[in-house]
Image (cartoon, rainbow, N blue to C red; front, side, top):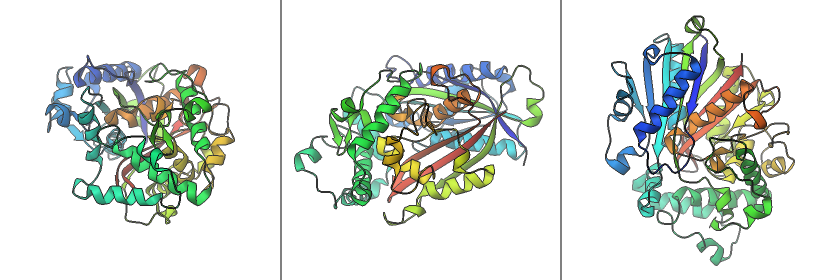
Amino acid sequence: MGEVYIIGVGMTRFAKHLDRSIKSLTHEAVRAAADDAGIQLEAIQAAWFSNSSWGYFTGQHSIRGEVALREMGIQKIPITNVENACASASTALNNAVLSIRAGAYECVLAVGAEKMYNEDRAKMFGAFFMGLDVERQEEQMALFAGLGKDLPVPEELMAAGGMAGQDKSVFMDVYGGMARFHMARYGTTQRQLAVISAKNHFHSSMNPYAQYQKEMSVEEVLAGRMVSYPLTVPMCAPVGDGAAAAIVCSGEFLKKLRSVRPVKVRASVLGSGSDRTPEEETQDITFRLSARAYEMAGLGPEDVDVAEVHDATAFGELHLYEALRFCPLGQGGLFAESGATRLGGKLPVNTSGGLESRGHPIGASGLGQIHELVTQLRGEAGRRQVPGARIALAENGGGVIGYEEAAEAIHILEKV
């Protein structure tokens, strides 16, 4: 297989962009990526456009990428629309990488854009139900409610977060159930989750692209409003808007460029979930996919210097410490408390602030991770720089069926 490189990245700030369109956000991210790569838009031979909810909110279905890119002059080339829930952007990148490896193109674009924030809160939170099997919605929610049966929680705490689809995303109840299962099984504490959240808010305070840029202490995180026990508001990804893009090329194309700062793609894997019981944790999608990614890269978890993972909640990040084999099963909370995942620690995780604090515009999030990791591997992350970072890993999951993500992509990148 031919070598594949990321030569340009760009993104908007993730925020509530009420006055901007999908087109506007897309154009900003794509132009920034092209400028970063030092190429003209005419050099792009194909594009993958990631988005999940444009059709839901405005009725723009079917040809989203063609609509978003045409007005900036990207036309005539193949444009593929990608929708894979929260894993949409990393799926777009996976497709772009495969197209280069196959020899179909020399220079391609992966871009994701999303506007999730809406002043109609019921409509906004209702959008998240699309990440479940809608015909089995009640059955799915009962599965996760049952996960926490071994951890009795006062009724008032369970009711404090309100109703999914009206007061919060349904995925907060999904993660709440997963967290309670882990707490009952391994003794994980709410404070350990708060340590993860406080760490991410610290990291995002140094990230100009982050939706939240204010530090929070562990105590402030714990004092936040309850969303779905044990998760408080600061432990949960906010609703927001944004776009991110990456330009991917072959080794032959790279030779034509000057003043480029490439990052090599060592592994790019995509997969879907499977039927399993909650107790079959080593059959989890991330356990399976990460094994493939490490094998493809010829590396192991011990080689990773910095990671961006799908922390839709603080518990999501804790689970991924274990599933990516950064620490033993059941010890994610202790790993967080040790300081290992904070800047200055053994393996900084979510130096961007993660979804919890950088933000989570669904169709853009996976490429937002790539923007951060490319910046880290280039040594250009400023105050949040991981010294000597050489190998980086991005994990991005999307949707839920059964007890795990419906889709997931993992990328491993290397400094050149």
